[in-house]
Amino acid sequence: MQSATTSSTYRGYTINTGKHNNLPCNTKTLDQLTDNIEHMTLNHSKVLAVRLDIHSEKNSGRTLTRREVTRAIENTKRNINTKFKSSKNKPDLKVIVATEQTSAESNPHYHAMIFANGNAIQNGYSIYAELNEQVKNKLDTDNDGLVHFSESNGRKGIMIDRNSDDFEHQKNKAVYAGSYLAKTRSKEHNPKGSRVSSSSMINDNIYTQEANIRSN
Image 1 (tube, rainbow, N blue to C red):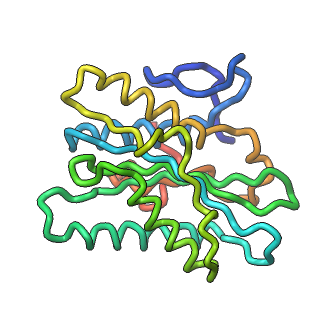
Image 2: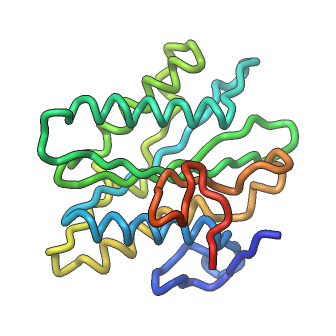
């Protein structure tokens, strides 16, 4: 049984549980989110946070599976890393993915929160563009509308600058945007036995490549 919270704060950060605190958030996903942000801001003076939403084509018999999303993200990371092979600043991409299926009849879609070394990547659209190509390849389509750049990103993504006077506010903004992945509503129809969310972060054996429930 996964635990959830309806509090408007978690581990000192503001989270989105709705206007009346009636939209629970899964604490496992919140832990992944806050651990990633704290790890990244400890290791990089600037961190870029970007939320992307991934869909299958409508009115198509081809459904994007969670495994294919994982592969698309792995390819995205590899290709971006290759572009920075000769740079002193490495992207160091970390990704959290949540599956959402609104009904038994609907196709699942996916929400991804991606963190990057902000000294290497300043514009989240470069991450969006690469992931978009990978999703198109997986579905063998020319449809450019399957990966969405969330409005919560602003124009380029949320930049967290450790040397800024707004550092804590910037971290809070990223956690609030990412807490959308933690909402329990609309996940009731997820495939039985599927992960609530997964994280690519490996930090002192707290996470494996596909994170399981956080140790306490």
